Image (tube, rainbow, N blue to C red; front, top):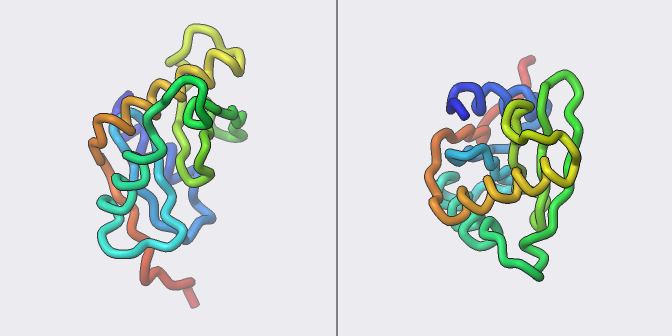
Length: 129
């Protein structure tokens, strides 16, 4: 999937969030609730730990969120701040099981390849007066 499309999707999904986030190549987004140091490094460390899928463990668990106003789905995993976007043209079947398996495979790739493509560092952001 095109990086610019992924950035746009996550910016639209996280509009109300003042949290920093890091996007990986295959669509996995790590939301940093308390960024400490370099966001890309913190997100990479977390994704390296919880991104790869191991059959029979909680790392293989997933949930699927139907999006409103944006085509596609978000696939969740064992860590609530690690989310993966699946576009409507990616899985052939749009059942939750196929979307979830597809998203989980994308998270696994991101968790093993660890290629950061975008960082939204919202530290220091203030509300407009």
